[in-house]
Length: 354
Ligand code: COI
Image 1 (tube, rainbow, N blue to C red):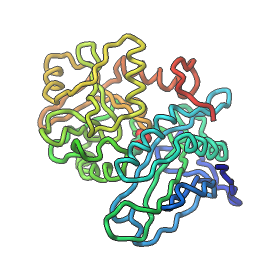
Image 2 (image 1 turned 120 degrees about the vertical axis):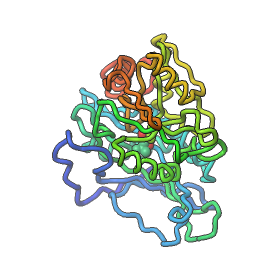
Image 3 (image 1 turned 90 degrees about the horizontal axis):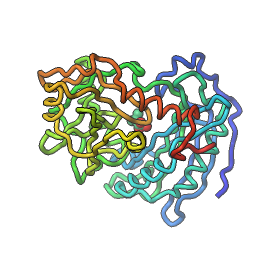
């Protein structure tokens, strides 16, 4: 399928200061759209000027949340190339989410081509300041005008682009995280492993309460025993205990992060012991008490590597590595961002030219 491009006649001004982009505040001049209609399949791919999308007030996505999304980034290298990082992984996960939410699968290779085309059309929006990139948000939603609860038969696949800086205002400075023991995010058999808006809707209340207490995000515990660590608001989580790196195993309720998988492979390539297994919050606290918890950090496309400087679990406050970034977190951050911005040779073959 070829992708026609309708260019905007009124390009928007670019953000004045690339060092103050924040996250999710600006959108580029164009977007990609494609429709699904039962009987026709996915059709009519197109790149058009960025504009509001008209929806019937009864559109199913507004009522029952049949929606999935992805997040990846385009990076501008020092010699002016544009790189994507493991887009195949994002598109495979999009189809995993699609399957769970009864959304017809997309052609992963075609979706990557569409993303590349869109990024090329808006290439002059890719920021170049240190630590900045172009965040790519593919998403699919059901638009049938129907308030009965059924899988949609008419959907839209859209991709929008946003020039971004660090996700957290803290940047690479450690964040404070609240261990959530009232609310739960997901249970096995639910949708926790997918990237769907509902998972983030269910996180808002806990996030809001944690923020009021001065915490940046929450650390979720499992939804049954409230015992095992799952993930942090927008990131997977890693602990460095007694020289070993431990991250919760993917058991159905945790998002399989692309950055998480990349960290595991990088750590293995360095010969650093890395365990994917259930880890309880009691084990984390016991390691802290025994002075064996040297680092905690999160990983994610938006967050990259985000060191955790404090964990609060009930009345217990765990102050990690003196509130400073640790050696493993810093080394992983440097390795990942080195690959993503094309500063170091890509021995893993993870980056893709746009
Ligand atoms: C990402 O890291 O791409 C995410 O999807 C996090 C997002 C919810 C901000």
